[in-house]
Image (cartoon, rainbow, N blue to C red; front, top):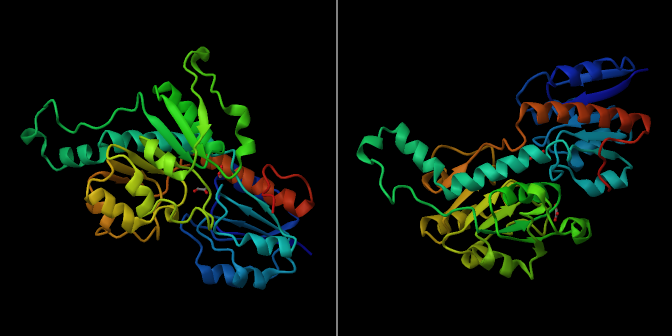
Length: 338
Ligand code: GLV
Ligand code: GLV
């Protein structure tokens, strides 16, 4: 009898070929670029030994109930694991693979892009040109000015692979100082000094004394943490009230790390300079009249942080490798410690 695996999305060529080369598998696959509907997953999960899922699939008690005890492994095509009820995996001895290393560069690039877009008002600027407003707003010394990245202090909320990769890039932009909050301080001690550009432009990243200090000191706040109960609404009214009027908020983590209502208020009242977001609470349900879209200083991207051709190919391939390793009891490319 073949081993059943359920795959919730179409995969690119190489990853799909690798998957299909395993003739011992019965592959049940949602063959579309669009998310698999929840009922499809619930209907097909029973009897599966492995699941290859996206961050848009919710792997909760109801889903797991349909496929334990056959389920041995889950491979998530993501770095985030907040869509999966982790404690239940441990209970049922289910291994979990994910793709953190594949997407570090792409997401770090996105954080840089959002920082510059927010500081330099790129969203407003592009919109005004598209609206035909340029003739009425010729070059002027104060036209669309914003804060400069060189000399800034950057505060990192979450300073794992992505945060550290963002800082390496920022060094090249002349950032002066970096402070961070992390749930895993042991992992960053060895990279406190960034030796780039021949060692001449290294800067020190130091732990923030607390979230209040990080909020007060930072010109750019980069959210790169996992979404957990302790990071949910980390950026709310209290935090935003501490931020500088010239500061920008960048979110490449998960939407719920930011309290949207509080952010809209802060932007509307000019209490912070701007925001660059790749994620938002309630995504993808963001209608054209969403309050954030009314804020000209807010740039909102539709969760494309890791969307480079190379990264998505690597994520697909690593997801398939993790799935196969999980089924055969071998080492995964990256496995979540449950
Ligand atoms: C993206 O948000 C991911 O978790 O891969
Ligand atoms: C979590 O990702 C952290 O580094 O704190």
